Image (cartoon, rainbow, N blue to C red; front, side):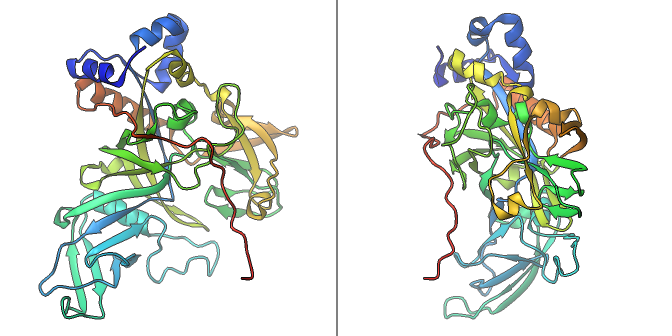
Length: 394
């Protein structure tokens, strides 16, 4: 029905019709699928929540004399230096040096890699401490200095796994409180937590990966980035509903973007008591309405998205594959669900409010002609399933 070129021409001329994933459902109900597909050019999707598999590459430039950094810490958070002389990688879940972690559980995890990334994007001054064994070409053995993001040649976010397509809902069936990456879970199924923007989430609006693929331009914390690969643990070969929505964790995206263009309010270091540190990110992805089938899939509602409830006291850590029950995101967003006749409180680690803000910001950028769509150079695979780590003797 439409092509990327035609949609971009309409964006360039200021005539593109752009709606958020929150708006499109009612619009299609009013107009009808065929008429809406003719009128609407783009549907914007978004999510905001913790994405542990995130990090950044930083390039400091050369000091005088030069140093080949073999160990480095930024604000006492260890950076990976097994690359070129003054390049480092900061991982979102790396702890600050000396953090007692869970030595006296539950640990507080006050500062780590995610907080370093947040502080960099906020323009704060951070300390770099680096060591080296020294070489003829890189003689300096120790360096201590302070810097901001503006002092760096490059600050590039490179996230191996973001935007999980669907995910577990976490509950605790044991008789003691547990602390997980899904937050604090009270004993005897007193509460449960989830982490998804549901009907706003990018890969739930493009469940079969028809428009989101390698090379897709995205909105990454305010910067224009792109998908550089399928994310780690991408498992497109999965059980799905008749509408194509996965019934559990499935696709993921590997994302990258320029940190110097990012906005601090959409990048937040996270401390998860008893578990560790992470990074909450805001991601927006446009869905081009190329035909009626693509539009129909963007009309997914929270009630159409199945969510498996998993016991994080036993079944998740022991990888049994068992689920307590299935629910959906309409029930989750109501604030409570019923399991075996018991009312259970629901909490969310993601923010629908922030996701909706991102979807609207992206829509505005497209309407102004500041954001154009890109056709993927390669599709996300649909035939991958996730492998397990086998523990072998040799």
